[in-house]
Image (cartoon, rainbow, N blue to C red; front, side, top):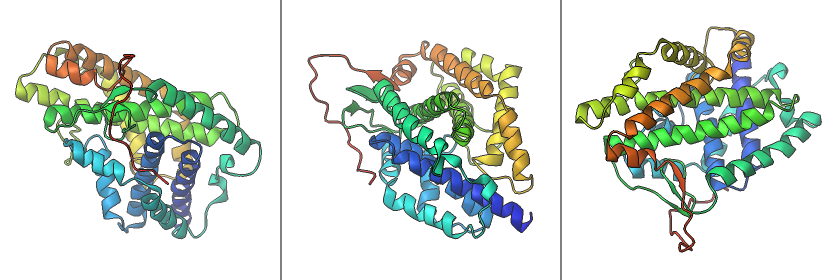
Length: 340
């Protein structure tokens, strides 16, 4: 890998992190700030691996706690990890990437971050997207179970063990995928937001694979933990036929393989061999429909599996449910520490 090649890949990770840092400042939601900051953590860990210098052990542990195929099953491991994601911990990651990128490649500068029409469109559209997502998934009193979401007006299951752990991971991955989809679908309508489209597409790929890895253990990674299929099979809970059907579907395998390949080149990791222009071209050519179809197939299979046992059904339904009861005037739920 040439010096120029590594510099453009460092630029890619730095610029995408700056994009998400800008998004964080365009929402007042503490939950969304943590959702968005998780991408910066993922980028920074790939950056450290690219330069061969792992400096932020706690942030790497947080990445592992919250990344679906390594995620902790214990509620408080996830809660502590989410609480540790603040501007104070993210800023050193940004400083590392900025200070280690000595000659940023201008061809990978993101127009959305510069003065001009792209920046105006980005600054106008993103707050509207975040407001709509908040209204659809976070507002009011809710039953919410995912590692990154504590609104102060929601109920969470505080537990540990293989089955609750699977669904903490499942619902976290689904929430992050849904946010990426909101950003992507809206940015796609604005021709000036090319890089916002690309990076939200990458997030969709990352979290589509993450969702799959919560259901089927990632056999390609020695650090992976048991998925829903393995837990149900080991504990003889419910019926895994719907999961087995998806697992055996060649279309599922094709989509997963395609998504995983791109994920391992530009987001979960940074490919050290292929030229960055080639990787970006591959990303542009990859259909986002594959990630949506993968998520829909998984969710339908888990929905059907949930019908076969009460313990699975109640945890599947705990992902995000509004509580529309006028008698409830307050829920003393866990409230996140302010990001800033």
